Figure (cartoon, helix red, strand yellow):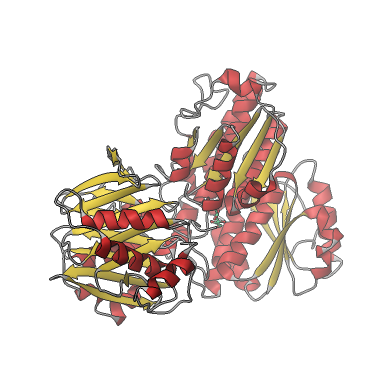
Length: 616
Ligand code: F6R
């Protein structure tokens, strides 16, 4: 949430920062702003709305100076107004600051600063932080050894409670930025004669692949082309420079209308990348390089507890079904946000898995820390390399699907489903799954990318269906067993990008309440797989049809539905149980996407949402 960019170099800072902000806009898009340093003062342009609006409606692009900071905001404290947009400037004009996170004790600090004569232009906690730095700066002795600027920031951060990723400029210190993090991501980019700062690597990769992932409690002091990293306690930190593997093209639209469309169509390759090198030589099981837990220890585990939020939570529900079915290990799935407050009894041999595309979701991170505090091993399944969750986990699996920029998760979700299926195989083969069962399972997983390719050919049909269903205000998504979480995912996709109200239910549960919603005005999307559930799901469809509900049926090819039962039939390829959730996801992604497009929605930046939720 919120995008942060900083630059120190020889180029015009505003242009580089604005380009970075455009790449970060998916992290927040209520308002945007940029400030540069020029001849001992700050130049500032900020405005509600998108980065393009900032460029067109203000002199942002023309701001002079080769040092600057910029921000895209997702409002927490204070409404969406120009005054609340970042950067904020201290009332003595000494400091400019951008901030991602929430300062919980801002109100008492503000009261104190008001008594000291500081004034405020906005309702934000960020402006309070900025003025507190100014307060400490004017109290800080001038010394030859220590940077007064750095020390003022350090002192300030010792007084604040809450979360932050900040970047600060000081009018007295040309070509310097001090940045720090606690609970919000921050990455330093080390370029050719220049330094950059961002909350997400996608803002840096057009200028450098060399990055330092800052850790919580660290402060970076950027001075020209040099930098030092210290902790809040003023201890020195030796920086580790990592190489980013994502390319600029990965973070660009190419010929697609939206990132969501691009990412839906990237899924076959994304799945190939997720599974590459992860099957054993004998082709009977999965293998993971970074679990950091021996097969012997794995066999001791008598319960697995998954924690996640949103789509990632749906992926956990599918993993639960597959692990219980194929590995016979009991699985619990908790919302990460609930887990940390529930204090559930846990057995000694429980293994925790957290799933998070971004690796920065604050609820998932906090839940993971809670499980670790209780002495449990926590493995993480993340897409973003170097993210906080990936770093703090005891081990884990990277998804390798490249940057996911559309706010609605698509390729990351199906890749999470794939890894869940691979875990079921891996654990299953340590227990009761036979060699031949394992080989059949591996072959099925290897076939998943091609099945998804085939399913993507349904796009024109789903576009046509979408045109006809975009007029409805409510929709139900119904599925059973491992397709129930896909019903939840279909409903979430539809509501988040089209703003049509949608609910997901186990198909048989529908008659215990949701059926009251059914009318000609409330269509249902049914997942109708072949196998033991086919007749049961068909019965549920009959109940809907009897009440004049319209039906879109997503049916396994080869299954014949009773005539006239469904209004639209979408045929997906027949596949192994472990692959079915992945394949069945594709039509609901396409349906939601085309409905949102038909309604003229801003698909990649739906209202009120932002990618990577880093506030509680
Ligand atoms: C929905 C969506 C969200 C995320 C959720 C968790 O399309 O993208 O529900 O799945 O915010 O995000 P991560 O996986 O980054 O922890």
